[in-house]
Length: 134
Image (cartoon, rainbow, N blue to C red):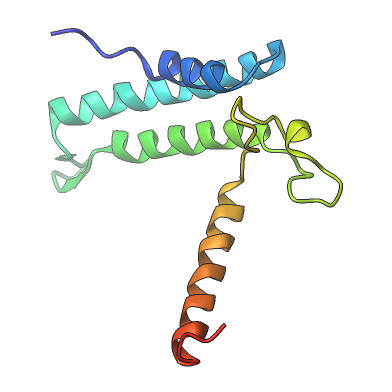
């Protein structure tokens, strides 16, 4: 069975396939990748040892690696957020200045995606109430 490349290798390969990266971006991806690699190792420990362990008083508690893996992923996400421009969505800012992909599509922040979905839901409800008239 072939082993899956480490999360850091997959992360950098995915970004290099979409963007031209400078050295600072490669360094940031390496840091995020280290966090994701650690999270994968913690996940492996949980798979091996189980999701619960004995606590200090013998009680059953969640494996501490579960919370630590979550924290490692949060740290990786925080580093990856640095790829998003603070100017995203500002007037006069084009896709090229936002680190567009080869397809010419600017990256969108998670907050932008969430807001867009919320707006679509609100408009869908409004159309349903008004009988579909636009």
